[in-house]
Length: 195
Image (cartoon, rainbow, N blue to C red):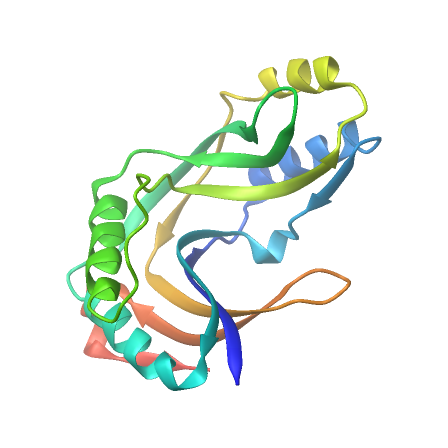
């Protein structure tokens, strides 16, 4: 039996985040964009894809060790952008401000998972929030102009205190995320919270 897994820090959107998100949805309602639901916002640190259940305990052990020395820390979200070209935009994202703890956590996860056969991606880790997946843009020039109008906006800051191992269950209505395990930062009582 396989599960589609990823490791991520979850975001709880505040009012400013929700306002900006709602504004973009309203001005781009004529385009075909699959918007990520507000309750699914997260920063992915590793996407495992389809994974044999028997490997999950090994993954959990490595993630537990990866967060062992990570303190609870603040993350700032600002800036908007796209992946893909201006001619063929694919993904709308919010940026994550530079943060040493994010870099250490990312490196720890990559190093630990390499011990059990997950080879690190050659590309540098670029922390971000995917907020929409683009299917079709009706007016690309107008879309880019509107994106430029918000691209430098501050969105939200929040305190990150745990990493989650999620299962992504796909359906025609979009993915549902189920928490497999929670790993608290700063060795908070050295506990893993099971759900």
